[in-house]
Length: 241
Length: 136
Image 1 (tube, rainbow over the protein chains, first blue to last red):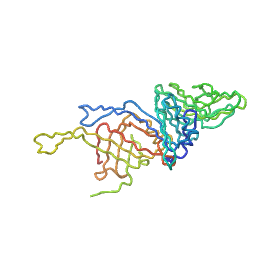
Image 2: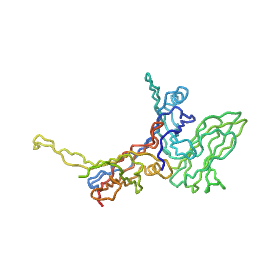
Image 3: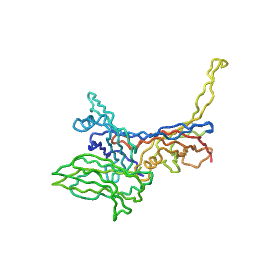
Image 4: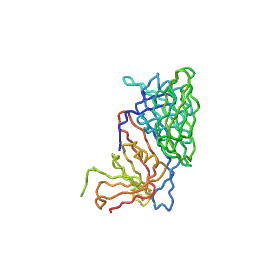
C-alpha cells in the first residue's frame, strides 16, 4: 500500500509545463445519476449511470510569465490537453483529458499571493483517461527508445490513448518522429508500431488513439531525432480506456 | 448500552477490503417525507414515509499503486458495486452488525489537493436498491 502526500505532481497544459505555478489540483469524473425506480423497487430508489462529465482544474499562483500568459489566450478554445501525474517519474499514474479551456480567474488580494484559476473541461469521446507516464519529461538529443511499461491489452471495446507533449525544441532544422510501439514481451524483441505522431519541429502537443483489439501488453515510446544539434524536451503519457 | 469510539471500522468494496484507506464513512438511510396534513390534522403536520433512499460518503486516502485503490475506483466508475460497512473489526454479531448495499459508483476525484497535502478524496455515491443489516 502506498498512500502519499502530494508533493511532486507534474502538470502540463498543452506544450507548457506549468507545474511551478500550480498550488492545487482539482479533478472530477462524474456519471449522471439517472433514476430507475419502479413499482418493483420495493420502495427503494434505484439508479443507473448516465452521461459522464469530467474536468481537470488548476489553482495556481498568478504568473504573467507562465500560466497567465499561456491560459488567457486559450480561453474559449478547443482541443486543449491537460495532463497531471502523481510524481513525474517513470510509470507514475497520470490523468489526462482534452477539451475546452472555458475559464480563467485572476485573484489579486492585497497582501497575499496573486492567484489564478483555470482548467480544461473535457469535451471528447474518451473523457478523462487514466494512464501512466511512460516517457518522463526529459531532454533528448538523439534517436532512442523509451522504457517499456506493461499497460495491458486493449479489448475490442477499448482504445489506447497516447499524449505527447513537447515543451522545447532547439537546433537547426530539428525534427522528431515519435511513435508508440507495443509488444508481447518486455524486451520488445518484435515491436509493432501502433501510433505515429505528426513530426515535431517545434514545441507542441498531440493526442492520438487506436482502437482494439490488441493483445500485446507492453508499450513504449520511440523517437527518431534529426537535424543539426537537435534538442527536444518532451514527455509521453499512455492509457487504455 | 455499548456506545463506543470508532477505531477500526471495516469497509469492503466489491469484496475488497479497503479499510486501510478509510478515514471516515457515513451511510445515511432516509425516507422521503410525504405530507398528509389535512383538515383533520388538528393543526399539526402529518407525514408518511415515501420512497427510501440512501448513500455512502467515504473520506479516503488515495493509493495510486497498480491494482490498488485508485485503479479499483477508476475501473468501477459507472457501475453498481456492493459496499459492506461494519463498525468494528470483530466478528459480525448483534453487537457488531454489517450494513450492505449496492451503490452507483458515479464519481471519482483522483488527483485533488494542495501541494504538501495527502492524496485524498471525499466521495459520495448514491445507493441503488436496499440496505441489508445483518447480525451474523
